[in-house]
Length: 549
Ligand code: UTP
Ligand code: MN
Image (cartoon, rainbow, N blue to C red; front, side, top):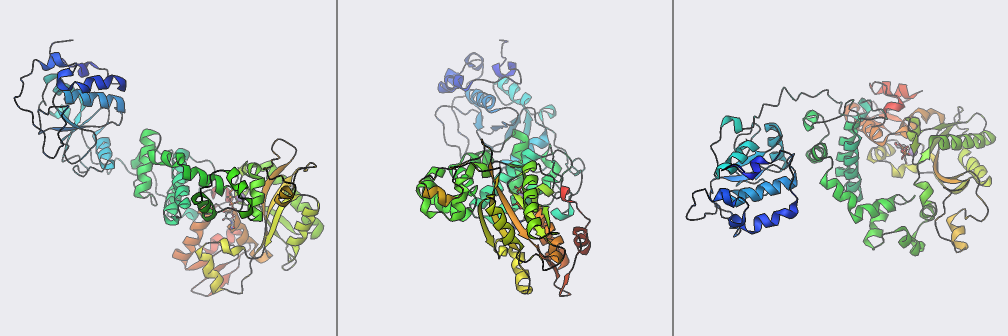
């Protein structure tokens, strides 16, 4: 080693030290430091001082209390930061592990001044302003020179990190409309890693009953889905609406580190995993899943032990759990739509069956099959659903079904309004079902009740055989409401939610899957097509393939 040269100054920038070598460094304090030879050339201060407010650490002797260092681990990496920290402490420097108000000198390696300012802000440091004033933002060269000198060297301009005004440099690439129904969101999106992180947090918030928080994360994810470019820097999102502080923090972490610690924590948590497991059972919502979790239930096997507590729907959901959580392929959805068409043809010729939901938006797979039925002569559709379901059941095509007249209960607040402002309105007949795609072999329990009767409550799966259980929603609509039903059932949920929000706040209208109501003119607006509804709202028509918000 050169005389007076410091080991750290000789380290290549990417050099990482095994943390296992570090205790030996720190245990001995300055005396045990492997810079002892270098240290011995330094004038020794008679008395060690601790900086004010700093708890005294008997391991280290602080020789420069007016200088408090903080090393930026971004790009430097944790092991190198740990190594350099030990080194500096050995030399009598005070080094804080995290950024706080005691810090006077911030040392970074490989980051721009703007990046360091962003990093400090993210760590909650309030001492630095947007232009980097308030703290000395320094390149590693200052640190290595100081280590070599055995004291803090004078800061020269070349040591300082430049912070530039961000405004013109960080202009957004484009503005994004505030409502999802004003944006085009294709199926293929460019920011999947980011949207998945936010959607995990949205789901977790929903599992906690925090619907407002869940909505905020969903909205932020939805905005990102519509961006025609891959986001690489957080500043690209500066002018976008709907991306709140929390979402931004998470996105920044993912952009910089590849993952968000918060999201990973959620994904690993027992509660999240259990809630996910339970809510994936057909017929189980957040409230039920949450109650089961509180009761100590953790697995599907636990639920089988508590079989009596399950509704018929949930029993069927548990019985066919594996199949119902295997994505439905487009070809399977088409086959089911065709089978239903044939049944409808027998019961009411000229009635139509339309595949809606995600498949209409172009998805190649989905969690269920959403089918809308209508007849061009209004009134003819009455009684259709029970006939069709009866026929399908007779053919052995249904593993479970339940017909509902009031499907409105599951709708959102806006719909309650229209229900009260237009009490004469019709409500769709709807059937929740589990379809048997293929033929069920002998001996397999069709329904949960049969499974129970035979003493067999073990989940069954058609996955490896000639049949598969598939969730199917059958909805019947009067012809005059068909465009509204089609628009409402095509989704996505974010698109629908914003469409209704847009109507309410921007148009003083109320929209649901039945109708559009003008609250000022107090009239319902009829529509012959989806395009017509967009026209009523003064919105540019967005085709189904671009409603994947
Ligand atoms: P889905 O939940 O089936 O969503 O509802 P999806 O987009 O088809 O997704 P996958 O592919 O199955 O996972 C489809 C649309 O139907 C409407 C919602 O607006 C949703 O966008 N819907 C669903 C209702 O209006 N009411 C309901 O009770 C259920
Ligand atoms: Mn669907």
